[in-house]
Image (tube, rainbow, N blue to C red; front, top):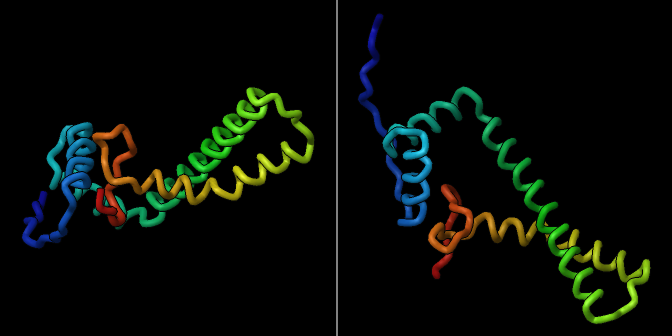
Length: 129
């Protein structure tokens, strides 16, 4: 069996929170950060669209979850305020939730910190706190 020597490298810079997120994921897999990154890179070479398709599907599910949450909060607010819920008002609540779900999901998914009980990001850019 021929062993291929690993002689080439790829380098990148990460923010502290991105590094922390990578470390958490690597530890969960029982490997170091470099080995985890290598596994991700090699997997992406073999299945280049798999990761992207999964991310898109998860984003869509998250968008729908946020829309339902928004609708429930608005419906509860209507109930508490004693306002009559008409078919037109219900349609407006649904339309508003649908219109804002993608932007809200993107904003939450790209939030930079794990320490504030938010989703960690591994890719993308970060905004200053």
